[in-house]
Image 1: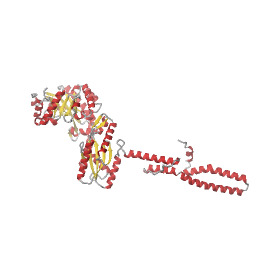
Image 2: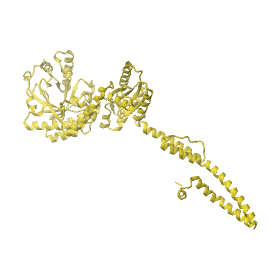
Image 3: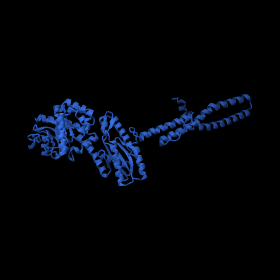
Image 4: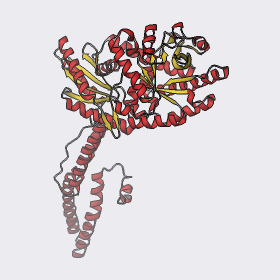
Amino acid sequence: MPSLRLYAWLARFKRLNYQAKIMVMAFIGTHLPLLALTSWFALESTHDWSVLLHVLVITLAATLVGTAVTLLVLHHLLRPVAATAKALRVYREQRLKLALPTHFTDEAGALMADAHRALQHLDKTLESLQFIDDVTGLPNRKRFLENVQDRIAHGQPFAVAIVRIANLARIEETIDRGHAELAARSLAQRLERTGHFWDQLSRVGPSKFGCILHLNGKQDTWAASAARLRASLKLCAGELPLGELQFQPQLQGGLAVFPDDGAQADALLDAGIAAASLANPAQVMLHSVNARRQAIEQMQLEQDLRQALARSEFVLHYQPVFDLQAGRAIGAEALVRWQHPERGLVPPGAFIDTAESSGLIGPLGLWVIREACRQLGEWNRAGLPHMRMAINVSARQFLDPQLGQHLREAIAAAGISPDQLEIELTETVAMVDHAHTHRVFSALRSDGVGIAIDDFGTGYASMSYLRKLPFDKLKIDREFVTDVHRSREGQAICGALIELGKGLGLRVLAEGVEQKEEVRYLAQQGCDLFQGYYFARPVAAAQFEHSLMLPPLCSMAPKRV
């Protein structure tokens, strides 16, 4: 940078503006020497003081006229500097871009052109930072709200449509942020290609997209908009390749209509998001007062869950698993319950999904593992027959690279044998990433921990994948067990699953049995392991020993046909 010492010295004279300072220096530099030279020449040429005075007056007048002309020209030459300064000041204060010419080629012209281009670039950068989502390139929430507010000003009915990726946070929490951003970017491209998002597709949150749908105010048009949104969800719900992982997005849709659901942009957006958060995957929910109430209740439930972990409000109940051939209970499944201070004992179906979506399933699942192992150690020391404890593992837990370490630490702390522990994983979760599943199953087997596939038959798993996985047990879902003794479809499915288990060298457990006829039929088909209300309900640890008695029907294993 050039030295500014002389400029800094002159800047101390604050009463003179920039042009005046230049004129003073120009006058000193050119006109004083001229006056001195004129005076010397006049003195040398004549000793007549009147002539000398006359020459000096003419010289001074000519100098003043030259100074005035110079000042006028200088004023115009400095206009580029003043215009550039004004453009910068106005942009800083009002975010307005004043036009600056760019066709001049001298230094002042280059200053204006460079300032113009700098302001253009700065404006685009600020526009991007303020209004563009840097991951997807779509307008962001702030821009979307401005667009919605502009639409409100027109007074015509329209709807705010929201698409929510319910399981996007799981990608960031279990893999990394880069994969989550890739998933969001890929889905944004799909949404743009569907053709159903006509106006202002924007990213209004980390896992949410919004757009504006035109309406004519008729109820059937709103229903038609919901149908189009559902169609878009269906088109966009296919697997997204994220490197080696195939991500299956769970999409929810919500609609909020102006003016019924809000008169301001932020109220409409919040209403659409609330509706989407309560919709089932691939479904669309219209906003309503009830939907907002449910959203608030859901948020309150999440806050209560966080406090429940800190206050140790969770308890485990245990449901025995009976082996008819052995004639006794051989294990138990640990089932979490929430001892809510106001609502009483809350079953898992009322809070597990919220724990999963909020990220609380990790610490809750770890507590279940430790507590179940601790209780099993207590039963060992109390002299109960050798029991195996089954623990359900969520999708988020299963993707945790520390799962094996957590299990080993819990086993060691409880003083139990690894073969007394069994991990249950649903068929659907097991098939999400086959390579990861195979690695985890192999590691658990090498540690001696048992593995069971839960809810088998409901996930449409590929048999070619399934037969390559190292696991020990199949659990037939209660959907097929219920009324199996009089359901031809149930009999066909259960019979096939039992034969499949035999062929793969697996034990087969029927869960959810509630009738003796179901037990009798399945036992005749070769199923030995049972779990359900017919035998025993889940109970607290203190009552577990009293639930180990076999019902009279099952005191002897039925003969098989």
